[in-house]
View 1: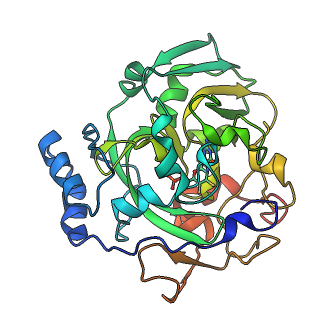
View 2: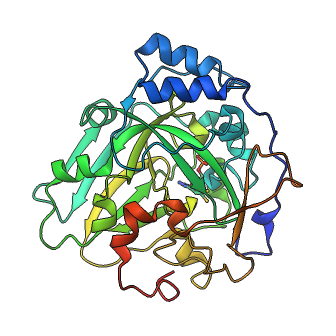
Length: 324
Ligand code: MTE
């Protein structure tokens, strides 16, 4: 997705391992993960492991409509080794290799701007705001590939309720960590750091808009945005900011990193839409990582990534070509 000469759009061949026990894994998730032991077992069966075992993070089965896609989850190995996280380099394999220098604890998130009273929550307090839920979301990258990811977390709306935004709060901005000591990629001018993203308030309040703290029943690996990131399954992946340190409520549409870098290529909304092509490539189909390599049949991409029944109302009457 690099605006500069296609560098990001070299579809690297991710390992095509299909986790042998994905069906059991998903069934365990759907049954609602009885406890930490069950979660540990689940992660252990989910294909290749990240180098070190991470702390278990159990969740209960989500009851949010649309939160449990029946699509086959992508292997943990692919989820953790095929990443976009430019603070650690622009190749898909860079984050897994370089994100070991990120320190996800201690951590705090500042809640500021148009709220009754600004405050800061440390990670433990933030994680206690609401019960952790297991959700299985489809994930569509603007580059034309997709995954299915079992996240652990809860709706951003839980935090927004706690933040008590004022009547002036029309948008939310996510500001992420930019520490050159922890993030070697910051020496590259590919984006203006820190990475920032934003949503309209009604989008941010939608129950599918998720603050994620874990994947496959364990805390987030660094390369996936530890210790806390957004997940917006109906939008292209770049809207889902990783390593969040500030959540700012604002009156006007906030700056977003990719829109600043290439406004004709990346709009503010960035809803998945097969009918609105990226200027340099079609968005009509996608390659599901793990589906059998570059020769596997591409799948049709669905409006709002298939979440139209849940989120379509947010955009009723909007010209989606203009507000791309
Ligand atoms: N957040 C930060 N801070 N920096 C980034 O480079 N990349 C985005 C998004 N969030 C990115 C980020 C993009 S382009 C995608 S596709 C997703 O993270 C990838 O998330 P994943 O690696 O967990 O699949």
